[in-house]
Length: 208
Image: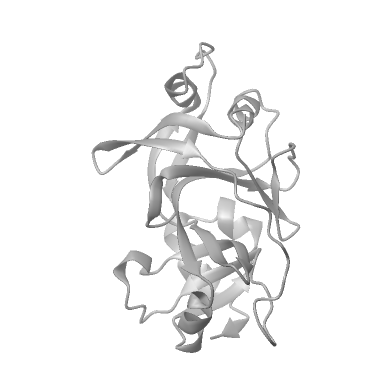
């Protein structure tokens, strides 16, 4: 099953219907003359970021090519949900599973769409590679595997994403709205969420 429907996200006292959505695999193509894809890297909002939706955000870039760019904000936790409640929302009758996951606000676009970002040790047929060290899987089965301790070592469930049309991100980079840093799994999964932006800034490799 490549799409998970009817999954609820509790945010701002609202329950949003959600779907786990499979992105097309990055094409690996150049984004323009002299440019390289940022897929697998972190995009860090500059301190003077004018858009309040991205204030102090850190974004894992999932795709960046000639078609545009897409990333998932990794430092805005929203709420916790038990795996049993998530599976029950999907109509799964096996709701006796243990464990819970932390839900993140992944970005302002299509906040009813969910993504599971995870370590590269886990792979299914619909898994999308992100820069070699990270991945994204969209099937319901990943929730079962996480519940049964057969899933990825580390994972992050987010709803919504940050998206840019072709050339849009390059324009924002030209006016120094963003910094970049390597996509360190420790920052994405392990670091205290309140410290992710500060730590990412310390590790930035390019001022844009």
